[in-house]
Length: 229
Ligand code: ADP
Image (cartoon, rainbow, N blue to C red; front, side, top):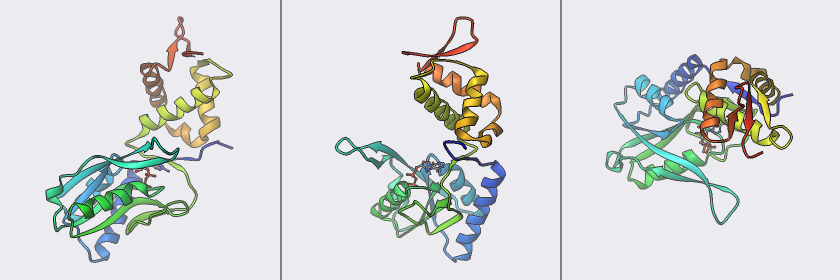
């Protein structure tokens, strides 16, 4: 059994979900004047929805998560603001890729309302109904089993993070890894699904970890050595 449930999402699935989401918006009889993408995950979905609905005005806001200094919990906050004057009095559709906790999308919705939007509705390709504190007005897929979805615009970053987690957590007992050992560890942690990722992404993830200073190549180049161990 894998430690982390992962699902790779294809570009075709993204296009299908965005079309389905757009049809639901159209069928509701509501048409946004402005689409507001939540960076970074909402960019591609928002652009596809603009295409499907024929919306010309696309703005974005970036929400990031940060552990608050006072508490041990994560707090979402706005890092990059939207162009506020373009929202005044408008029907605004806030879009993200997935609603997991619900913090990002509810914060972005509140932000658009405070910025003077006429009416704000929310949409996401996927809604994890079993954990989210917030239900978007529109969604395509209702996810009931929590998973980490590896979206096609995010593969290198996700594989880098997966690899980083393995190296950090297994680092106490093992500090030298061969490439194939790392690949089988990936499979052990993230299941057969992760093996659908081309090996070139795994090589790139290792280059990223080298650049972050977490690992280095052994002198003969055959192994990756965890630094500081
Ligand atoms: P929201 O507030 O919309 O629920 P979160 O704040 O939980 O989203 O997460 C912020 C971003 O992190 C999401 O927009 C998405 O890009 C990414 N993310 C969160 N959960 C998942 C998941 N289960 N699979 C893939 N990406 C995720």
